[in-house]
Length: 401
Ligand SMILES: Cc1ncc(COP(=O)(O)O)c(C=O)c1O
Image 1 (cartoon, rainbow, N blue to C red):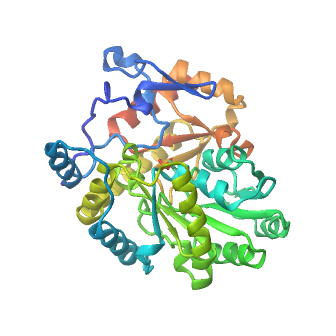
Image 2: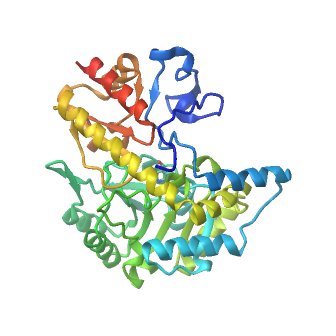
């Protein structure tokens, strides 16, 4: 490997949410629980979805150069930003995006909130497929919308969509929007073109706008193929909004830069108006520099990072099979988040949390956070040096045993 993913990098003192905070009662509280000084007693955080790897060297160099300039005034992306983004999408996903369709937002989650604010009326409903990334729920409920759940079907260790239920729910005329997670966090599915086509047709027939959150689109396991929803057909492109970002791919989440692609002119105008209303039309000066460097020079790094993550997953699977065979590990197709079924323990979410945090001293996301469909599961962030994963699994083995 050219890049080093093995070395543990101390993230103390970097304001890291993952390493230096604990979520409690809806707030993040600072603590030094994961500090190196606690040695074997430190808490190993495998919850928040960022990587414990340094981002591609080309990104660090580009940011260093920008920092050396010393003036960090208001910034806007120029031609090369858009050219870089469009080239990446075309080359990797075969979709011809026009520059006008792209709006920048300070994150996919802020964009989801603003999309609900701008495209839904109070009382309209948005459909989500739980278990799913929990901010989907908040973006709807915090902005006057109502939720409809089209739960995923979990059978024989694999998740699929329930199309009959989807068709029935989409037929409700108050359902205006469906938020698709593609690839799906937390169940790690990379939806096939056929699945996306069925999903898209049902939404199209019922005038339901598809918001496709494709933030994990570059994190695809070997042998899987990611299909961008809008690349399937012109009609789908007209009926969808694609949310993408370099943040998960290259570990740039703190730079708060995402790209929201809206082909439909009316929706684009409404979304941009909402960005303006919130005063969010100036992007982060570092985010635009980092994105360009990452998409232009980061691909070799990404391939190695993904290979490392897959090897971490293989380790997890073997470890569970050998030491905790009752834990069912869902196959990893995309993302760096492993979804593991601990329901045989028969513990409530709170009891499992206590076991993991207090006994194992491993900080995971409990499945219930992603909806009741996630009951009994734990989500592991595998974007960490192998040594951390090994230690976390040994501790879980001891605690559970
Ligand atoms: C599906 C999904 N969407 C969005 C985000 C976060 O997006 P952002 O940091 O751009 O707001 C995450 C982070 O884990 C995610 O998994």
